[in-house]
Length: 57
Image (cartoon, rainbow, N blue to C red; front, top):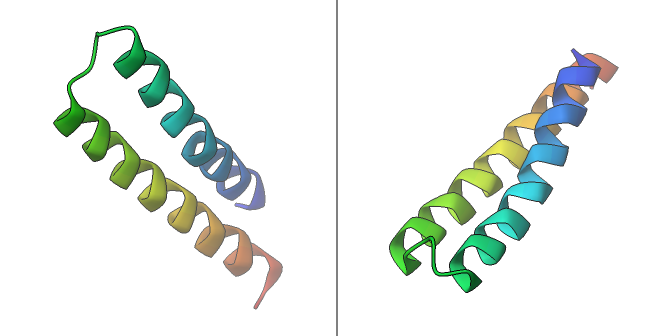
C-alpha cells in the first residue's frame, strides 16, 4: 500500500512537467493543461492519503 502511495505521488509530480512540455510544444491546449494539473493534484493527494494509511496514522 505504501508503494502504491509513493507511485501516485511521483505520478502527481511528473504530470505537470509533462503537461507544460506538451503545451510548449503546441500539442496541448490550455484547458487540457488545466485538467492535467488538477488531475496531478488529485493523484498526489490520494497517494499521500494511501501512504499515511499504510503507516497507520
